[in-house]
Image 1 (cartoon, one colour):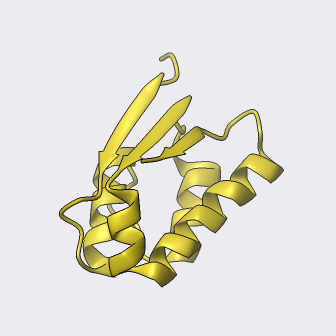
Image 2 (image 1 turned 120 degrees about the vertical axis):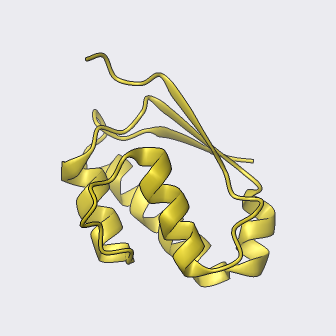
Length: 95
């Protein structure tokens, strides 16, 4: 199956860490046993699912205001993937 070219994730309705992880799990197709924490997110994106070529987050600035720690950790995971696994990482746009 070819790699998904673009995935848009709407973060506008996310108001908690649990909602953020649920949104990411559903959008990126994480397995049912996803642990809903940042270590589990890293494990999922770096080995359990195929990331899209392009990933666009909608409502990023609002999310970063509501959940600054989670926004920072999400960005760190995605940046780290780009550094460690550039051929597998998504090009990410924070909009």
